[in-house]
Amino acid sequence: MELIVFGRYFQKENASYLQYEEVLEEVGAVRTIVKVSEGEMLILRSGAIKMRLPFQLQQKLTGSYEMPFGVFETATLARKMEFVPSQEHGHAVGQIEIVYDFEMQGSHAGTYHLQIHFQPDHM
Image (cartoon, rainbow, N blue to C red; front, side):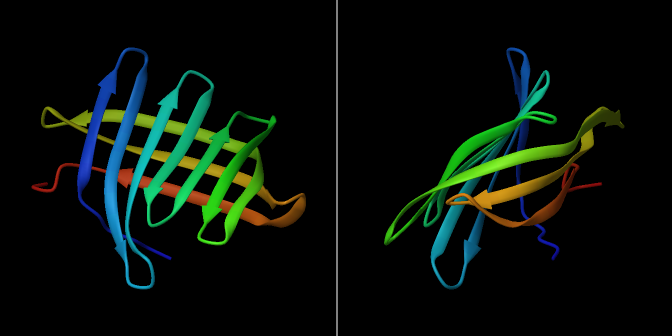
């Protein structure tokens, strides 16, 4: 699946952030923040979907996924985490990649490969 959205990239203290919003036809607007810091990544979603997915390489971490009918406990085990920031023509560009095993309520729900590419919208 591919999704193209407009958002913003910024750095604060020792972390890099991507922030964007997507509108899902079935449920409404979802705001997503991806935080990358030394050895850690975190995906936070709020709005129509509320989710917290933390990542550390080879560490099983718990998170949550909130739906209208309840909150589910999740677990992630990151097998690969990569953040490659760079500059092109004075603008921040880059890629975030995470490969992880995902559990919901203690049951394996799949292995996922997430790639995020970011660049200014005028390139």
